[in-house]
Image (cartoon, rainbow, N blue to C red; front, top):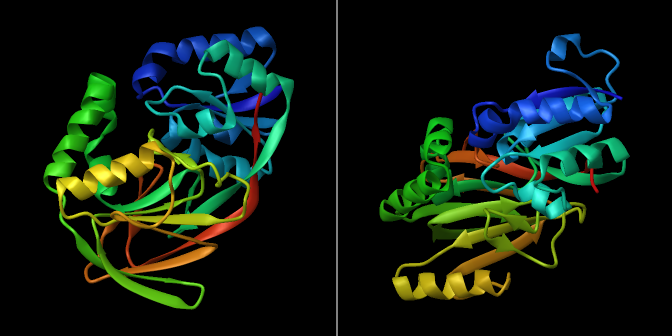
Length: 274
């Protein structure tokens, strides 16, 4: 089997385990090409890195009509965890060789695909602070530190969200449009999946530590219902407008500014699963 390998060697694990990935793939019989311009005739595309690497690699797989393999080397690896892809390099590589695939939905905003989620507000601000250099040098400690900085500077902003013929105007600290039932390393929703044909919108609307604690309890209980500082909606398409432009991130990567329309692309991508 011949595959195009996209390896994020700037990530912490990528720098450490990149050679292991290449060696392991070769040992089990997967011949890898690292140059996309020389990858004619490959039968798969492999992303070795975190969720950002996966989503930046997905368009290559889509353009070529090929399945995507994942070797998780990131901080959270939300997609790999959702799909049950092993964190062990050799086991992940063998799952690709086995050839079993699952076809999943993708989200799309401003021409950027997302697998897990797209965000505006607090986590978008945090993601811009979590540069590859911070992640590589400090790992989870660096991620936690930038999150605390972002929380300390968080301010609510006005948005209007249109969906299914309804327009809702409100103030929020954080707006997330999720394709997956698992994202951010902490959020899990049992009634959402990567192939259900829906997007889920979450708005964080808290003004005190008590309300923030209530939301934290809801998240811990995997409770997606609206109330206690959390607004949730489900649709195939959301249009978001704000009083001033706000940055958008898709799976932690920059994806333009508001206003923007988020939409589902059903059953778009085949991915290797155990």
